[in-house]
Image (cartoon, rainbow, N blue to C red; front, side, top):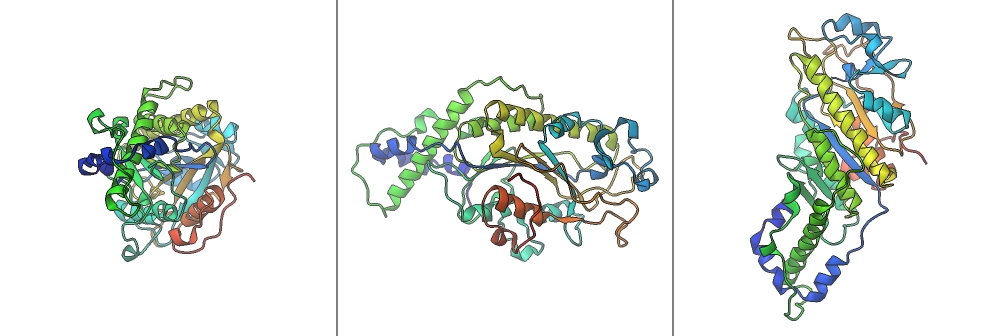
Length: 400
């Protein structure tokens, strides 16, 4: 399986581009920009976010019982509704809530939780519990396999960040690109195809297909280069890695390339020791980046088209450990952001006293596949049963 970045770097394919007739070049460059379709942005919170100190159950006596060093003063918590408060570092989240642009889906997980980072993330990314059913395909890639393919060589999904392409984006037919730096999408001048003079090749000819694909890549790279050259300071972003990734995603959305799904990561949530300061910084980075991103898109009148999903592979233990941290847990909150949301709090607040008797941890309230099904069906307009391996009852998340 090859990502679009692999394709762009393939000198063999690009070498065939000059043989493509000039009329095909004009067609690729004239590909219609998509200014109407809905977009999903996924933020993966790597390491297991401590949901209990993120969305704090104000009236639950188990909080004071199980959290001594890590207990956040009630007076410092940010108000959401009567029963929960947000971490003090999430001031930007409150601003989004005030504009009805943020929703918290509570106690999200899956039956018989796996506390391994690798296994749990694989379950979230593939929507398959059984490893034999994953086949290195993800829930987003599977969903895009049967979706309309964007024109002009544009990938259906784009990953912004370092490392390998997330499994969630891998499909059998859909094209996903990995972008570590903005420059990865820009082809060197020497590799750019020049108008060809050769006669059109037969439609079925492999060389013609390769030439058209290379040309599509050039058209996409040319458009990306224009995005990089453009300066847009209307919405300032915090000086963080996540905000930088979101800023680039906003630029791609403004360019109306036709990509439907963007994916990025924020690492550092595996807080086994000295959690308080680290966790506060992470939540500030997350919510600050989200607010800047939505402010940016709102200024461009594009925010209504976008929903952000922020998830982590599991929550943390209810009881703090002996190192002023928490260990791998079970259920946790998932965040949705964007103007299309209908409600601010979804699902029941998990109890810190009525715990799972097997491990003494939070009970799962909402299967994550219900959340995925709702996003695919109600937001992106894509069937969900095949990507998720079954039918799942949708949640009420979006305005009509």
